[in-house]
Length: 415
Image (tube, rainbow, N blue to C red; front, side):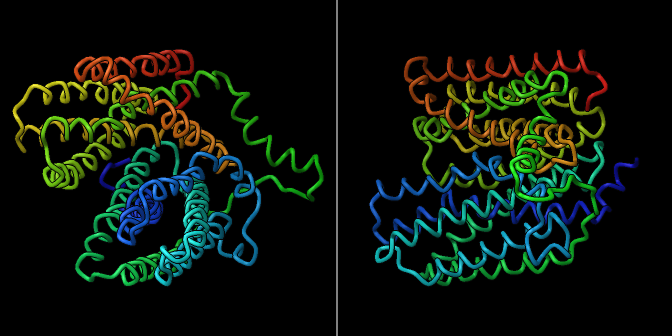
């Protein structure tokens, strides 16, 4: 297939737009809400408890089978996956409207309810969106689709992160900001109705008896786990991004300890770093498209790991925007390549009959493992020192890469 034809495929544009919608709630939950609460003089120890809303992203595999087997009532005529995406996006629109109407200092319990609900509907939207994306494209196009998803995701996070903060600053009004965000979400709901969904034959659940419920819950995961090399694949997927996650969790404290101020970090990361991530993402997607999942993962995994050398180099440079730009550009290129390759690989792993459940399981495991292990990053830095720690993050990539080398030899036809 001609590579240039890929970028003329309107379906890829749709995936890019939906990727934006997928990324927007995350920035709200992870950063924007914290600034909003702080501006209303909510104590820091209370603000950090709102991190509970993130749990839905790691637990989404628990209700993913429901998304796989059932269309959402009254919306099924628009498509199985679309019914869930429309419902979840509509709920998020309503929740943002509600946020625009409340004062958190007067109704904190209600804010908890809204934020936790936002996390739940966002995670559920991701389940249906990932399934929709996987079912939409053949295996050779999953890499490009993954790149467009990550690109859209990043743009969406900029809208609800940096843009929202800027808009709140120039208007001096958080109610106006959240009202504007709710209107943006509403426009995405309208866009969802314009998308065409392919019909896919799925198993039917006749009633809610135990046997039927067992089929709904067990079959998607059983289908994956009985395949050859399933547990080796799970281990490889979990380990592939571990080194990168261990680097990411300490990167901000590292920049600050070197002497870089917040403005320098923000300008480089939001500017050059963002661009480098997008370039790396599309490079990773193209590699997967050209040479397949296993070989693509091996190549991008090696590159992703080697780029950590840039942080060792930065550790021995005088403080300068040029040095910071070089280090962040190199690392973000490699990280973007690895991210696109992993998303494409996970997408190709899924049986399209159970794509929502299986992708949710794989992505949840990766998220949960990385989010738990990385809590030890700071302690390791203090005991090892920066240079040794960065060498360590490079070494962490080796087991995952070796597993993919073995899987490529053992199951060479498995994309």
